[in-house]
Image (cartoon, rainbow, N blue to C red; front, top):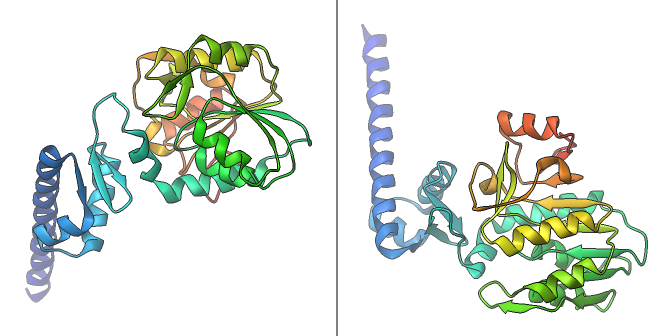
Length: 277
């Protein structure tokens, strides 16, 4: 009898904990709907729980696709739209640093190689690390990536022409595409907006999808970096099939259906603390 009481008590306690967590999650999402962005410290104070509990809640909500964590808090996802660039730089910062380190360990190129670096919050940490490697010739359509690569003075860095998309520090348009078409790259490293196991790599902007296609036609090796939030998402423009690239770098092991898709496409996948998939 005593054992049964103990078990029932444990079950009641677990159920109570689950209800409290669900209630907190609803409150967090309600606050985000009003504020669009909220800090861990404020959530901890309002909900009267520890910052560690809030961080755990935010991680669970992010994994279920309800929000996106940023440094010190979270922001509300906006459907198929991208988050602001400065926000994305802060999002999953440590994961993106690990992705850069993973690729850096596997990256070998001859001095003087011609390399295209795409823009985005995922490639910027890598650009900062590549800046200190042996000299190469880099081309990029992103202003902050260019500054990161050029900083130590190791490399020859060229920025494509084009119109400035100010919220991304990105250059787009015909001049940018013509600058890419006029070269043959030994290596392309870039990010993506979304990955579908059937449709492949997807982009929110038609110009970005076209850039992937032109780069694919003018490169010898193609690498994409994508954190786990890009998998299973949708975007409006098809860029490349999965099998068009030579390597995918991400921050965690792929779910089974996505892993099978990349295996069928014969594309190696590497992630944090892993070898090839």
